Length: 92
Image (cartoon, rainbow, N blue to C red; front, side, top):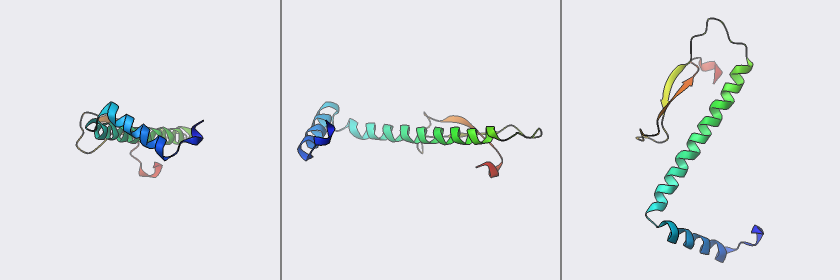
C-alpha cells in the first residue's frame, strides 16, 4: 500500500502539512520532536544501565546514588528534571 509513494505524492503530503500547520510552527514542532527523542534516548539508556546494575549484587557500604539534573536542550529549564545516577564511574 505504501510502497507506491513516489516524488509527486511525497511533495503533495509535504504541501498539505505546511498548509495545515503553517510555516511558522514547523520549526517549533521539529524542535519539540528532537527534545522528545533526546529524552526517550536518555530514559532508555538509564533503564538499560539500571537493569545492568540491578543484576549485580549491591555492596552493603554503598552510598545512595548522586542526583543531577538533565535538560532536554541547553537553556531549556522548563523540561529539567532530577535524575539519580550511580557515583561509581566503573558502572557506566
